[in-house]
Image (tube, rainbow, N blue to C red; front, side, top):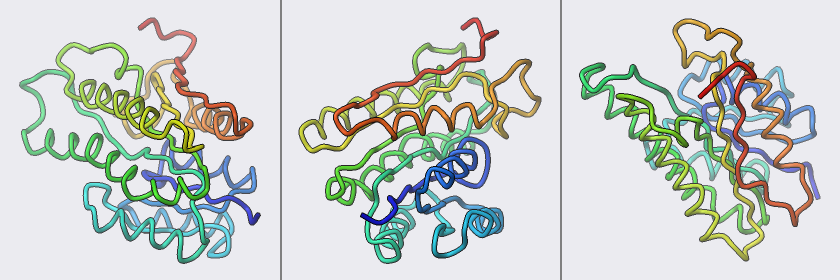
Length: 228
């Protein structure tokens, strides 16, 4: 078959960008989706231009954008083999921190946006017997004091397992990626001894390059120095 196709939301920086670079090295054609078009276009050009990498503006909270992302992938490349629902962002801890509007945007992006990515790409993944990945977090395995962000990642963790159960028997594999502290724009100040985005990208590529009968359901990656 032609080189497989890897769709990544939140591809303009951090884990998404690092995963795009690793996937390009591994021979995937790429569909890079995010709201920041300029960064996406530069990255797509660097990773091979329109024959190898497409930049698609996508607000993951908008169903029409997600539909267009999937449609563009199929129109240009004919298939989707990997769909990585990676877009998301965090918030300060404390239920009196941030604004309700900020909370709403985060919840819609982290939870509703991930669900829409599943919905938009699932038919193509079934056709290709492909791979669905979702970015959860260590915070999706243990509650953090005053953290609504943690609650959104618990939701993503549950979503990944729900998708795995629904897709059992279809040939589609499902993997939850659960990073600890990573040096990304998520943090205003770089955490001490944090992971690099490429550390997570290598974990993603490990999951997707296993033989078809191997479904790596969860990868939780912490820095060596992270206690919780």
